[in-house]
Length: 317
Ligand code: NAD
Image 1: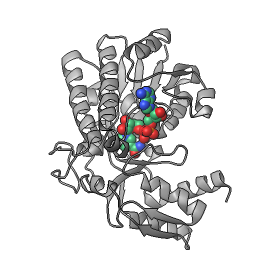
Image 2: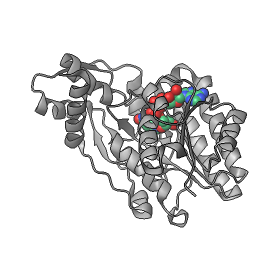
Image 3: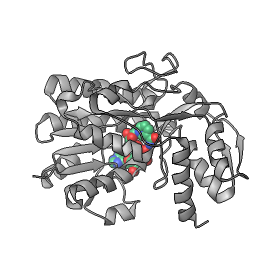
Image 4: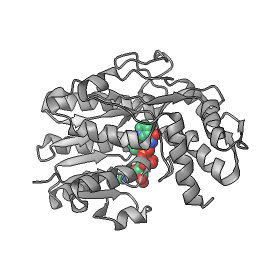
């Protein structure tokens, strides 16, 4: 029998592309997309869709029962920058949605769970260069705290109840389809849009702030590779470090400039600068590479090429 998948938070930056890819792999009727609203109409119209509040246990449970769901991807969350504006809401959504899904899976009908963590689990006391899988993790944002605690609960539910939960600590994800949802790495998406629309960009991080990043195609590939890996090959049940590229605002600016020589940038760091400075600048993901053969495909210039060409089509330049 084919897997029946529920995606919670499917209309977000990652959910949109994950849903499309999973529908291609498993058939559209086997992938139920859900979100708290219907803002991505193309996604809503392209296959089964339900409005589900991730904080509502019964709504998730009923949907799983009605559609014989055996796999859940929980993508709903409040991200780092938004979480600092609404800390209690971030705690409420990020923790309770995870408990609902883990508790459902503990019951046995849900066979596999995917829940993303983030490089935000790290903090200013973490080694910044080539940050190891196992290291000091003292996050300073509410978002990072929810991800760190979430990781502990994932491992706990796996060890104690045998829940097959899998997770990746995503770096900043860069994509051209849906806009990012309020994170500290959003500048690396906005910069391409502004390059095409206005030929200039004011960056909210300083020019030399290096952060780990990944092109969306690699993030989706990593997610699907991890979910397809044999359970016995997985040695991490909290969340895997995953890495692709690291760059500064100046480096992404220079990469864009090779295609758009007149592009201009100015820097005006805001509250997100302090968040960025508390995060790693590069990540050691050797365990993911060993356990399930993780490999990224896109470097900075390859990503810039695709981003600029897709956004040119979008804005018809
Ligand atoms: P996003 O903000 O773009 O999307 C989140 C989605 O969740 C939105 O469509 C939103 O409508 C939905 N949502 C919000 N509240 C909800 C609720 N109560 N019930 C149901 N849905 C609700 O986020 P994203 O960038 O797609 O991130 C997805 C996951 O990946 C999150 O867990 C995030 O922490 C993690 N992550 C993302 C990045 C990144 O760079 N995008 C990096 C690290 C980790």
